[in-house]
Length: 118
View 1 (cartoon, rainbow, N blue to C red):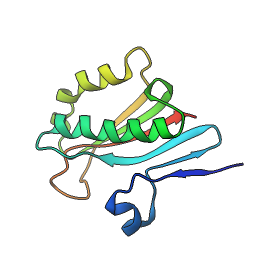
View 2: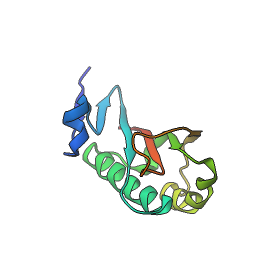
View 3: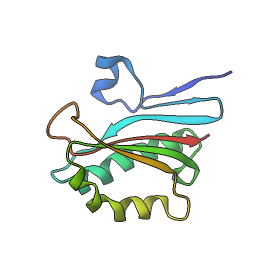
């Protein structure tokens, strides 16, 4: 089986030892991704932009997403993201889970992890 690693150039990839996405076994596995911005919706959009670029580099897209996990330090902030997520996934929503938990830095309001068909 061929494994292809996709790097976004983010500073934590080298520090921690991971890559943005891995293409293997017919799937694209995108690492947990945070975005920049002051609000949860700004961060959600920014994270999805980074994920979208990784998917495109892998030859995939949001329409091929099969699984998505959302991690938020405050579950009450998830609902404002719903319209953004509905827009991005459209008629092809993946199976999804939302978990309330701490993130690597308190400035982050949402982290998104996604698996799609390659």
